[in-house]
Image (cartoon, rainbow, N blue to C red; front, side, top):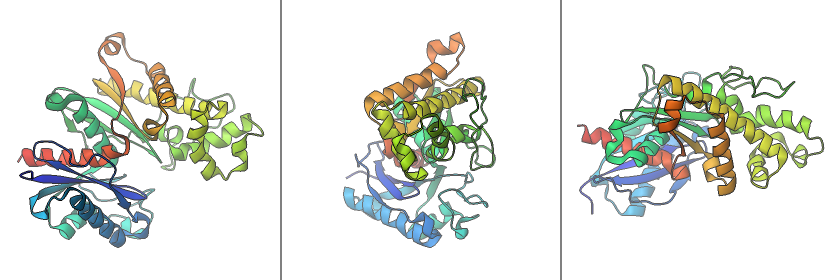
Length: 338
């Protein structure tokens, strides 16, 4: 039995995933350990679900409560560095009770343990960086784009996540990118739920497919099978079509790859990282399509000759487990720093 452990909890729109990390840096769970999150039903039920997730992973590992020293928690944004949900709410926190809610403090009071908070993009970014560099993590920097319902991200410098004054650093999805060479002739500029036009998330996210890309590309492929589906369902089916080589679906993901490449091109001039990570649903796709997509991102990322010689574009490891694992890494690092 380990001397002590930390628990990582990844809070999502439909489920919570948890993990346990021991003092030596070994994960005690090697698969998804999910329970429903109930975030759309408000803070009270969602906090009970987080507590259930905590108890679930302890039960899976047999670790007693007394050996848990801290909890790492991540949620989707926008959210402050201290875990206060945006006063305007967020996609996954639509219930009125979430506006300005301090989820970190509430979980800390409920479980009686210190809680270390990150947003979900930062947690996944930290985990990817940790896996890549191990003991040398402080000697390197990285940028990660996490494509899901929205587009999250994270910036790691000298081995630590950059959070910013208000906790909003790494909100890479809401960076506007150049449309030249990205939009087709006559294609409307995509609109983001945040109110911006032509930011990365308006292209590279499930919401971007549903709201912007699929409606446009269906006009270019009249009679396509996806036209018979409700737009929300059709958007979720696009990846499967792309894996089977469907031209409409590949056109959509080709635009997404160009948008991410444009984002990484901007990041190159801000942070000049050692590695650019890509995570989210595309990492879970069939290998041939995943590799095709990653290559399109590489082709669309403009680096200086000196940068291209030393930088790498890679996938976030371990898919949907990355968030909980990154949260656990953050909690363990916090303890080790005293």
